[in-house]
Length: 77
Image 1: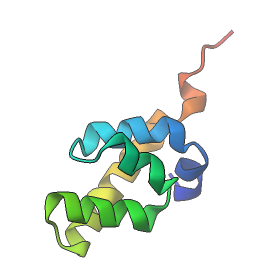
Image 2 (image 1 turned 45 degrees about the vertical axis):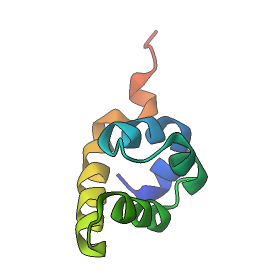
Image 3 (image 1 turned 30 degrees about the horizontal axis):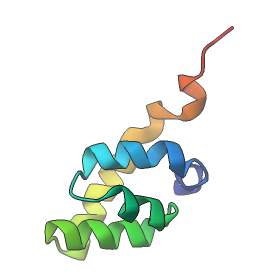
Image 4 (image 1 turned 90 degrees about the vertical axis):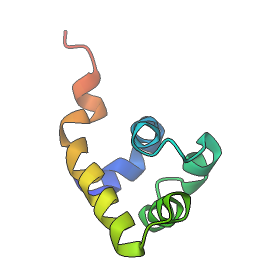
């Protein structure tokens, strides 16, 4: 999934991010406003990771979001 889609639906995806990185507070996630570089930086700081490792985690999480798009969560009529 492209990041712009995650960013435009950040209110939905931030709860998924919170599940993945529970050391990040709701405030930290909300204030990123879906900014990928800022989220990577917060992950790096919270978990004491290198920038490269934080990026790997973020890329892995991003790849898993493909089947979790909000449109797939809506009821079908």
